[in-house]
Length: 269
Ligand SMILES: NC(=O)c1ccc[n+]([C@@H]2O[C@H](COP(=O)([O-])OP(=O)(O)OC[C@H]3O[C@@H](n4cnc5c(N)ncnc54)[C@H](O)[C@@H]3O)[C@@H](O)[C@H]2O)c1
Image (cartoon, rainbow, N blue to C red; front, side):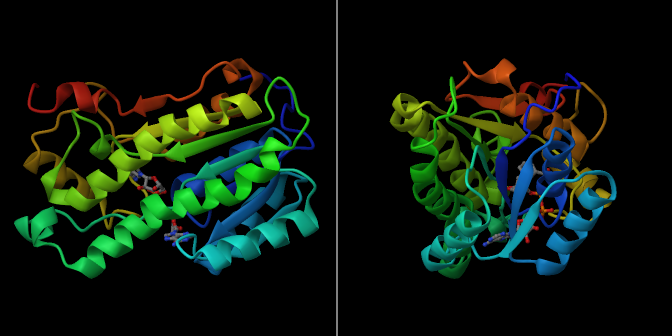
């Protein structure tokens, strides 16, 4: 990636920025000059992310505690964002919750309705809420060739090769988000907005309780990674940064898998 501060003067909003991928993307966008709206339900995590950024960057950082599954809170976030900033070039729909895995009790057909609602409300409806509320501003921006960029964080669990009954509802929510990526690319293309997804495989972030859990889970699913390491959050942040850069201006509607080869290897190595 070039040294140029290609996000200077541009604002990026990242949901779920209080930890994991969201935090890492915030750090990397700031390093390219972006100002930031950081959202999470976890204010303490957001404050930590902001403090990490301000150690080395001069970005203007607005923190907004809000639950993206609730449209009123999303609209309130829009109000706060546009009182503070005059543009939104990047929206990253990153916030997500994992369905508890490992046992048949987490199969979709054995799950409780409350669990269904929780997963769909955050992973799918949350991204829809954010996109329908914030894309309106993006549409009216005069940046060219691209007026704004949307990045969804999906999951290999939502792809054909990664479908996984042990996290059935999560898989379905992420498959939905992969389809939304294509639908929104079609709906927003004429407004000069690109919509792409980053589709991670297995990364150790706070969404998992421990590395042991991940190893056990991989054994259960007979997963061997051709590139034999668990992913790092920086791997995802680097791809996100590429998508925000001018080099990616002609890419839209894509679900970019970043998994060390996991999806091609399940049950094969
Ligand atoms: N870690 C992995 O291996 C992996 C793999 C594939 C996809 N993902 C996806 O990556 C994204 C980020 O996850 P992560 O691994 O960094 O985990 P994480 O738990 O560190 O981050 C998720 C963040 O989302 C926030 N959040 C949850 N519900 C929210 C809501 N209603 N409103 C606003 N914020 C909310 C959480 O507080 C948390 O800070 C998720 O969408 C996840 O499904 C993760």
